Every structure is written in structure tokens, then in C-alpha cells.
Length: 611
Image (tube, rainbow, N blue to C red; front, side, top):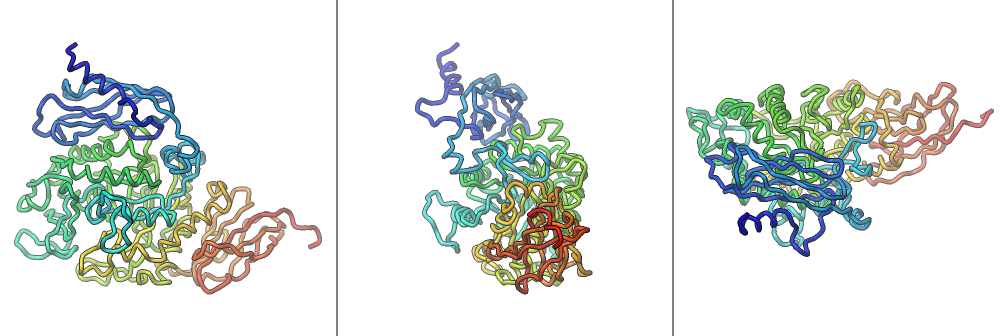
């Protein structure tokens, strides 16, 4: 063996002297340099390592990262010695038959306290209804909707100097701000292929004749968007594209721009380092119709799914193949299923066990069926209280999976932007107002008690669209400071007030009587309930103007400690000791004040005889 080649192999195999120890659940990056030149390395080359360690033996795929560079990101799921050997198709001397090993050690107790994500990836609880980390520690999602987090609308500063939440705030400032409020999750869309500054309103595009049209024509012809969603590395794909007449507006989705993803990498790492799980969706559905019409489908889209997944599967993430919010403006779920199936058959699911989910309308169960590739169910985009039931449907599936509402009522979703000059959304309230926060709480508590035991994702006008334009009615930095977000943390307070037993709750709004009125599209007047199977604990939520009610299905002739919970402050106050009847009915007192309230009933034992 030539000395130079021996030196290269040693560099791949051995960690540098004095390097920090490799911990379990800590991303490691293997870098390879191709010996051959390829016309399009993104589509022409597949690289991988076969990774083996304690209880683990799988193939881990990598990705092209520009020039002659390919990377494979791996991690150890358990302490011990790990080894790997690389391969590529087509074989390449710089990519194939490299080998190495490393030793992983556990985190210390103090290190685990510093960052709970060091306990491992998210997993379903044993009953498959809630989430925990790999070591069994409960994980309750409190998320925020930062779809454009990978773009320059969430500014990146290399320094760690705090900046006030305002026009100069950066990505790190928003992370710190939400971390202080108890958040631990953010929704991100990796790429907006057809979103660029074109000087047009968001919902109006120009057709081939130069006339303005509504978004249906934009989807057909694939023109751009009024929002600039690039970052310091540019845009996710290269230009020109293949859409006739729009070569400089819809990119060539078969030619990736790795530089764009370099700037997302550091944000994903920063989120993980601060205890946040990013939920990463590969693309928004509005690029799919052009993608399917002008490129080879499902192959081209499947390749991009695998690119994003292989890039971020060694981060503590939840991954998604598509942001499917409006089905009528997208290829069908079955068309996406062809691409997802191709990824699963060719590459397999993410090797380290990242959960798979998707933004849905109205739910992943309705969109994809069961069983399917989905391992974390979601609801979204159908927002009012009549739609919380979709989580109850998910809960009662024969093969249940954890569920959460990933896109409920948006704070400030009042007279939202609409197509064709319509009236917008008519059921919301002005952002930052008390009424708006009340509607957000309806979504939080109503969805949780309807079966969303995995947690809840918050959203707000101004934030989901990363609005910074001078003409934007709400700037994102103002929306970040609305009271509705600050109250999110109290949902976890409410759930954890009964310890791990929140994971045992079974949703049943019918346990509250009465629990609804005829107003289906609203956030007031209804009530929700979940109960442990042994009937020892009831958690109840009353929207504003819900009538005084009774609880059914309690233990017969028993005493229950009743405590009101104020979802505005996260505080409890006593509602006394209540007695169930001989048929298990508990008459409830009126709520303490004219607003929404939650209630906890805890069984104390049989009622004394003769009382």
C-alpha cells in the first residue's frame, strides 16, 4: 500500500488525538472525496456506509455536498464500539471500501440535564398514544411554526450577541425567546423551490399571455412567489429550469444547490443544541404540479426526499416527505405516495428511527390511510372546534400512533389573505388580543383532550409566512410577542399535573354533558374531556360560554377532588370535594369567571356511607 493511501485511511478511521469524546445520540460526519467527475452528482451517485454497533446493523445513506464531496452522517444509538464501511453506486475509488470505527460513551447526568435531547430520538410510548425520548423520558411537544426558518428571513449571526425581538433579531434570538417560554419543537420546510421575489402579490401570478391570474394558473405554469425564500447560499435548486416560459422562475429540480443547505445545517444543529426537535418537511405542495408535469415523477421527487432525509436523519428530527396543506392545489396524496414508496423500497426508512409525519388536511390518517408510512399522526388546516375530532379518530385506530395538531387555529388569523379578493377567514380575532388568545387556547386544550397526547404546535400570522415586508399587516417580530404563545407552556403544566398518567388518558367529549352546541365553525361554547381507564382522573376543558355541566362515567358513589385550572396563568384553585351519584354522575360547579377554564377531577375514594 502506498504511504499516501495509508495515511488517508488512517484519517478516516481514527479520531484526532485530543478530540472530544463521541457520545451516544451525537451526530458524526464522514466525508468522502470522489475520484471521478460526474455530470450531475446529485442524481448520478448514491453513497452509503454499512454501520454496525451494539444492537444495530444497517445501511446509512449519504448525500452529495458540492464539488467532489460526499458526506454520510451517522450516530451511535448505544454506548460501545461502532464500525463502518463505505460503498457507492457506481463504484468510485474515493467513495467505496473506506472503513473506520469509533467508540461512543454515555452522557453524564449533568449533561442530560443540560439538554434532554441527549436522551435520544422521539419514540411512541408503550401504549402508542404519546411521545417519549429513547430512554423513556416523557416528551410533550410544544411547537411553533417557522416554515421559513432555513431562509434569510430568520437571520443568522455568527456571534451570540443577544438582540431584541424586532427588525434586527436573528434566528438565535428567536430560539432563545421561545426556549424561555418552554417551546421544544419547530416546523420547518426545507425548500420553497418556486418562491422568489417577483413583485406580485402572493396570490396573483401572470399567465403566458402576461395577464394576471389567480393561483390556479400559477400552479399550472409554475411561476414564482412574491416572497424571497433564499438564504446566504442561494436557493435550493439551480436555474434555468425546464418549465416553458418560466425557466428563470421555476428551477431545475434535478440540479440541487448544496450551498443553500449548508446554511440550514447550522440552524438544525443550533436547534438540537438548545433542546428543540425540528420537524423538517422537504417541500411545500405548491411546487408539486410543475414538478410532476415537467420532470420525471415519482423518481425526481423521491430523490429529493431522500436527499433531505439523509442530510438530517442524524439530527434529532422528525421528517416529512411533503407539506400537504391544500390538496386542491397539489398533486394527489396517491401521487406523493408513489414517491414515498420509492424511497422506502430503494433506501428504507431513516435508519436511526426518526419518526415520519406530514402536515395534513385534515389529518395524516385521512390523507394516507392506516397502516401507512406515517409513524406520528397529525391533524391540521381544518381549524375550528368541530375538527378536533380527527385526533379522536386517530386515537381509536386499531394500530394507534401518537397524534398532535400540527397546524391549528393561527393566532391573528382574522381576515387573512385570501384568493381572488375574497373575505378571508371570518372566525378569528385580531392578533395579540384577549379574544385571539382565547381561540388559541381552545385549539390547544380541545385538541389535547381530543386525543392529541403527543402535544401541540402553535402558529401565528406573521410567523408562519416570515412576514418582514414593509406592507405586511403583521411583522413576524411583533407576532412572536403575542400573549397566545406565552400561554402555550401552561398546556404542559396541565398535562403534567397528573404525571405520566396523562399518557393514559382516553378522549371522550361525551363524558361532559352537555358538551356542544350547533355552532360548528367557532371556538366557543363547547367542552372536551379525557379520562384515565380506571376512572380515577378526569381532565376537562370548557370553552368560553360553555354551559354549566355534569360529568358522566365516574366511579359510583365516590369522592373527587376538584381543581380549576386557569389556562391564562397556569395556576390551580380548589373547586372543593365533589361526590358522584350511584350511577356515576358528578354535578360540576360554574366556572370561576366568564371565560374558558380547565378542570381536574382526582378520585379520593368511596363516599362515606349515609352521606
